[in-house]
Image (tube, rainbow, N blue to C red; front, top):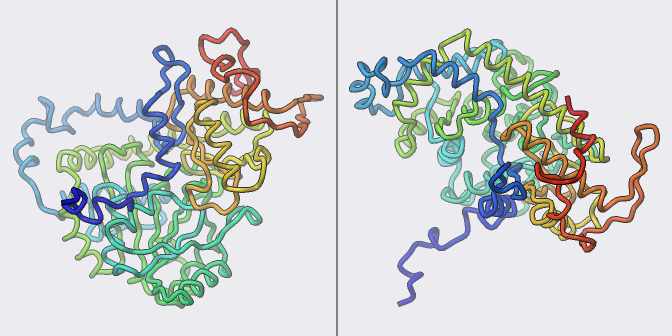
Length: 479
């Protein structure tokens, strides 16, 4: 008997999406990870959207509040009660704290009801549970492109739900329009696909942009007109580091009373992975205005609960108003500084990024470095960046972007030294493949791009801590 017949189609299929370049970049890093001393020429991980810039602020709080953990002498008295608690509603104090924190990250302009908060194993689990609640196999969600590659796994793999792209492009900085929504909806109907909802990510991953009030009003009007659900991924809400500020879909429901809105159609997915930098805690949140969805999602959450030990710790942390204020302010400050350093370094070698003010990444424009405006050319450039420049960035095609040459680059998952080395490597690569003239601090480029790197191995000239080459002036100017 063929061994494959012993397993399910799901087990043998590729629905997880690991064949995507998005995940291939991670594998390249895992096989040759950068380390400043042990492996200075290894691959620098800039394909992972983690927020490590404020870990010290959290660590200080933990040291000063040992009673917040049941695994310390100060907190041991609550160990038995917490370790034995298994109600899938979650600890009341945890739900209250999360609701309070969600309000705070949205400027306290709105309040969230703790009874509508449903736990899940990270945003991944929250999205899947929401999809299970809203759609049957074969039905679809509209999703503006470019979008997070993990959605192909989170919403499709086990649910059988389809994702229909809504076209957005650089002609208007990838802003979602009513026309694009209508076109995608009609295309799905022509293909006999029933659209059950629209999924938006605000702030955007991978763009790092936020939706303005006008766009959000358009979205609400559209889903009400079509009688479809709206799922709002707001997991980057507290990563906004400059004006304009973030506007939650909850604010539109509360404040924009002149537009019709059936609240039963609106659902928010949230997490502490990005805003707090806790991806390992697996705290995902579903906040639905629909009672039936809340009830169903809560039952389904049994397959991916947050541990009570984690709930207990976070309830104490998020209820500390002084800490939360200090953390959010410091996080915004450090994200802003890192953004300026990284984009400033790229600009010095003629690389532009989409204007943005949120997220843990930038949407980098390398269209001018492509041999041809094709996906194949984008992939060729990406392979050079991975294997020769030794930086893991994610190609736009893995985010379903239809314009070749865009790349998402994460910058908040590393220390300052790693950022400087990454910028040095990028500068060396660009200088090697461009003839650069710098009159009056302005860059003038000549189009003699070479991606073959035939002159010498990039590793031989890479700007590492042990390189004999002088430090890049780009890095010296990043303060």
